[in-house]
Length: 588
Ligand SMILES: Cc1ncc(C[n+]2csc(CCOP(=O)(O)OP(=O)(O)O)c2C)c(N)n1
Ligand SMILES: [Mg+2]
Image 1 (spheres, helix red, strand yellow):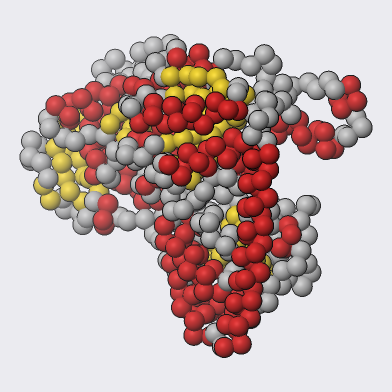
Image 2 (cartoon, protein in one colour):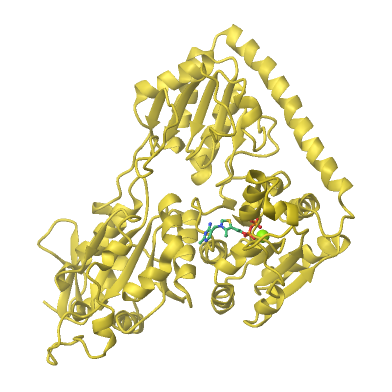
């Protein structure tokens, strides 16, 4: 039956397609999964797939767009960003063990950031039989075979598999996507030995994604949700602490409805756009002051609802954790007391909790809630007022103050509310959050892990996913360099997926310096004002680096020039050119 397309297989949920080699089957399986982008760094193991992409495209198939990434960090962070912006997993393809190694810290970010990504790597050919297509034909094929290539990533991925038989390709790819996207989402890894990729198949079974969908957590146990509602209604001094509720639009809207219904104060550590910053119930970014007095802590999609060595949870505070993974099963020690852990998709659970709460509210409850609403509103006004004043008083400061930068960025967003933000600001984050408004879901993206180098690639992926929105990356100078900027900016230019990259240039690894100062305030480094291993001095010329790949680059050191420079940056990316604005901040 070879030669016909879209034939019925003898297996349920499976369609048979005519293909030449297995590599074509792999591409057909990606097409069936609706993959838009293949983020690729190639090798002598991936060319059968590269050939298949061209062959199928010439046959009129709509194949995934190949995004050549000159460093694997860019490939994986871009796929992560794409998933974060769309909820749709993309494919990453890298070269055997060495390409896998270079995924490095981005794999940690995909794991901790719950990013569904399907990573494939080549695998050294098995055979030396000259009659076998794809067999070993270069010295590297001995060097790049490892005892356990998958062991490099097994700590971080949800599932891994080697394509053992060519005819499995459709089944294995479908399972990879299904498992990656199932709750809680995360990366998966598979290897494709070259002989298998170059094996003549004739036809391949393509598993239809609607018959093999990811499993979803849903709203969770209704009895537990009722219990949450009961505690929230009864609480005198509740506190919501969230990190990630805004990973879905429904989560953002669900929290907004519940918080407004019950006048719940919301403190966020902004991993996503979680809660509108102009809502009077938004209580800023420091959980400490309200936690000290809270009778109820409601953690929602939070990996660290407070830091026990810095912020004290009162003994009597009742703790609820509503989360896709409430006990953090892949974190070896996570010993926050949680009286009521609820495993649920907040995007569905919060609305139900609000429904239950409406049924429970008495007139007395409503009066108490209105008093709380007024108090929280006053606190909100005070916080935002203080921040605004700080920024204005530092307007003329040279080097440029973070508060002033935040203020100017905030004004830019007022003029361009369609901007999407990628945040790898490290120690500048909680200062700049004060000024950067969130007014709608889905406008803010953070890696969710601690592997630096994510921001530039993620910006590329988000821009590819949402071409109509300007993407602004806010990155520390150290983080900028970790992100393989030449590779990332080059890809933005080549793919016409530009971002405005704002480098928070304090010429320092402040995150490494500040704990040293705090822990050794009278130490040798402080007393001699001599610190090793933290200064990026003299700083590289990030603006010139951008220009070397055709992106624009500008250095900004005059605070009065800042608003105009930011506007030029936005205009530049709107015209289609990536741009780096290197903002000169004080050296900490
Ligand atoms: C891949 C990786 N290497 C090293 C670190 C350790 N680290 C954490 S923060 C930091 C410095 C970040 O510098 P920068 O981006 O300039 O932000 P700043 O600390 O100045 O705010 C380093 C090196 C890390 N998190 N990830
Ligand atoms: Mg820095």
